[in-house]
Image (cartoon, rainbow, N blue to C red; front, top):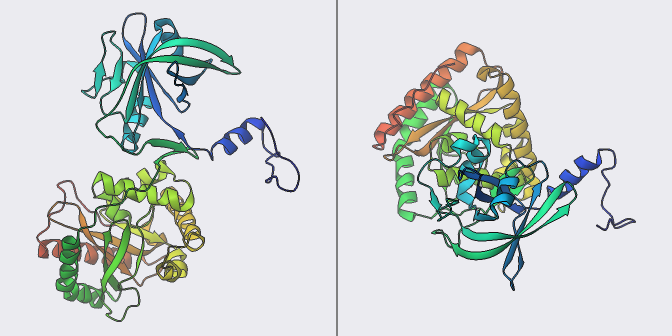
Amino acid sequence: MTIETGRNATQSTSASSPKSDWRTVLGQYPTGITILTSIDQAGGPVGMIVGTFNSVSVDPPLVGFFAQRTSTTFPHIERSGRFRASVLGAGHESLCRDFFASPVRDRFTGDIWDYDEHGIPRLKDAVAWFDATIHSILPAGDHVMALGEVSNLGLGPRTGGMPLLFLNGGYGSFTIPRMEFNLDDLGGRLRHATVLGDAVEQLATDLGVECSLSTVVRDEVVVLTAADARSPHVGMCFPFAAPMAPAFAAWCTPDLRHTWVENARHLIGRVDTELIEDTLALVRENGYSISFGHTMSEHFDAVVSSAHHDRAVLAPLWEALTTEYAGYRRHPEPAEHATLIQVPVFGDDRCVALELVVSGFGPRTPRNRFREIVAGSLHCSARLTAMIGGSAPQDYAPSLP
């Protein structure tokens, strides 16, 4: 390994431990995720997840991976003398997490595995797969390097699909999935916004707040209408990226939720998946989402005016929102934090078609006043859902603070 020194070298991280430096620096390098499977002495399936699977040679056809010396699964692979490699795709993040967290006996349940004549499983819808026999095993520090000679290989049903990657401690895909653009659907939502305008304006008048309706188009949130027709935000758009617009993400298709997460990863370089899941769970529990503090009021104009979604403008806002969500999770008192609420308006597919955004009140609003705003907003959103012929999910049960 060569370490560059002198004027062109980047800043050293010598204040931390060598192991920490190693993980931090290599964390900037994306790696693919593969499940390696074999059998134990009793013939039962075993498996391990690696981020080190690589091609090694064409003639003979060799692949390789690295396993920790402390691995409890690798000895089974070595003893068996053969393994199968299932390369994971962008849609396999949940499967990967479940596989890693499950006891060995529960990892191969369900009808997602295909078994060879030796009883070794591989994932049926893997992006690519390889069957190999052990060619050689070499020492490599605190790991061993295993080379396998490939006897068979192939592509899964998702030919051309994006791989699942590991970067900066989180999972992601190589590119942001672009949602199919449906002009008729957008036109329908625009017509809905026009029809619903009077009800939104009435809510703003009754509660003395500001209201608007927005929707998601591809991977952007677009403001369709506002109670004040002169609002400069109507027609503006901003990235559909976590943690913004969580009410959409809480009740949407898996593909759209994946886009929401991946947009955030591409915007700020990482995502806190545990925080995101906690946030969505809280949104579903409450039946609406909130935004916090002064962050939105201070930065929103810069966001919507950033026509090209300049990372220098957007990244600080997303960083601040993430920090404030974390603070809210520690002390979940909505009236203490909220500067706006976002309430779902459901379509006929029980997913969020529109989002009712209610603002014009500050943090530390008196609890009774905040409860009045939430109650009025929830009542209005239910009315809007009915007006467009939509239906809320069966488990949608909003609660008042």
